[in-house]
Image 1 (spheres, rainbow, N blue to C red):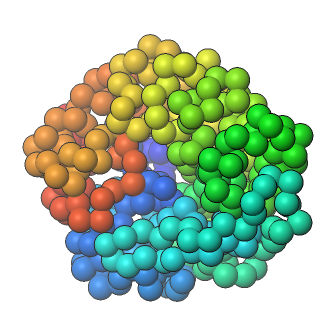
Image 2: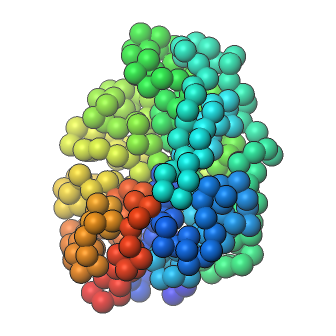
Image 3: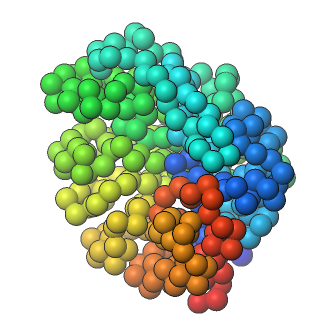
Amino acid sequence: MTPKNRLIAVLNKEKADRAPCICPGGMMNMITEPLMEKADVFLPDAHTDSEKMAQLALSAYENGCFENAGVPFCMTVEAENMGASADLGNRHIEPRVTKYVMDSVDEIDKLTAFDVTKGRAKVVLDAIKIIKNKAPDLPVIGNITGPVSTASSLIEPMVFYRQLRKKKDEAHAFMSFVTDGLVNFALAQVEAGADIIAISDPSGTGEILGPKYFEEFAVQYINRIVDAVKAKNAHVIVHICGHMNAVYAQMNDIRADALSFDSVVPMKEARANLPDRVLMGNVSTYTLEFGSPEKVALLTRECMKNGSDILAPACGLGMRSPLVNTQAILKGIINE
């Protein structure tokens, strides 16, 4: 099977020749220093140049690490497009938001409506088109920062979390505005050629929000993006960080094709609580950066045994992760 056919089959709950091995991009960035050196393309240049972004994304596949290409390589594109300031980092440090737009959730008028024709959003769309043209049999994964995480990049997070309770109506209006922008960006990525949209919402965890607010402010708005993307016949992966014990029932309400968790969630536990869902993950990114390829391959086989359908790092890779380690997940699958 081609990498694209294999991944789509698994997302459709159909039989595949083996488990896919992917790293979506976005929060789950797959770009490391060794890959930059192999491609002779470096961050932060590739954050703002579509040709370089495409070349660097393809390097993860060309060097035997993952069976997909995914862009962008950070979680700041959306917030920056809506008015926040971002530092694009360097080859060692990923981009980060440096200045919020709002002081309160009722200040929506300070936000800029999402514009897919400008800035780094346009770079991402152009990169997807380039990748699609160069590698038609490779699944192209576009990435969206989840609604809660985007919102908490536009306003100081602790203020935001407090106001979910104290200014609930205004918070919902804010979340609707943010989600509308994310839907626009996701659909533009699908139109550009993305086969799959990965939504990562590390700030929208059950541990932070609790089950009630996780359902109300994470699940509800994530599903608005999921439904819009699936209406365009593309697939969706959703990644949520943190422990899942308190919110497995709410996670099952997310209408994505696959659910992804970080390494604090035992895959066996996730499978027991979500027996009918396609699950992705969750090879320790700490081991990928600091362990051995043998240990990475062992963790890969354990994930498969315990119920993972799609093998992937549990989170974004450390920028200094050795190439032999990032290659070891795929080798662990093939040698199983």
